[in-house]
Amino acid sequence: MKLFPRLSRFGKTAGFNRPAYRDYQREIGDFYLENYVRPLAKGKTILDIGCAEGGVLEAFKNDGFECTGLEYSEHRFNYAQETGSKEIKFIQGDIEEKKFKSKFDVILMLDVFEHLEKKGEAMENIKQALLPGGICVISFPPFRSAFGGHQQVMSSFLQFIPFLHLLPEKTYRWLLEHIEKKNVESFLRICQTGITIRQFEKQIAQAGFEIKRKIFHFVRPRQAFRFGIKIKEYKSNFLREYFATGAIYILT
Image 1: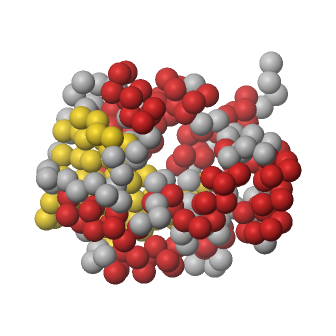
Image 2: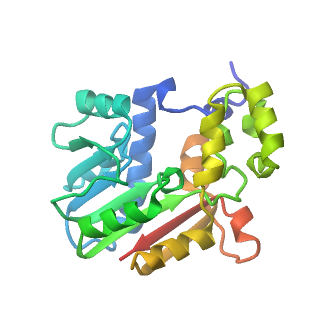
């Protein structure tokens, strides 16, 4: 028996246990539905960008939403198509390139924005797909936060070291190549695509979005659901880029 069973979830991605991961996604979906979407949405059509296995959309489907999911990864898209609800429309594609003919009352992009290289193009495509009066909900880990380099999904003990990705590039690369050894270029890539709170607000202003609400967390929802701990907001402006592990923006 493991002494800390919740800790064993640290770093576990979808491939570890897809059904369990989709249940975890559904918890996240319920949280966003109850706290951010239901109080603000004017309609019942929703697009989830980076929907993965489709668990988040299951929560919205159960609340009567007409659901569409966009997923870049072929194997995750295939899994969603094969095992997900037939009431959810899944599309394989890249938001940096995908232009939608349909428009939506709600657009979600949860922990995806930090991976995009063409953020400006993605925001233009989102704006084109959002109905007048609709809301766009975007979450991301600020790049300078403790695990802003996504090292929590590493396979070595490096996954437990906060702020590791802020080391000088040569040092960080050496650690990845000699200790982690897996997906080295992928972890280095997030150092190029990751985004700070300040950079994000500049990006959305350039795209013509307005901030309806913004929330920062010291313990963000994903961490809370995965480890069975309480969600805790970070309400101070003091070193927010470093101490807020997650940012949620609701845009119009």
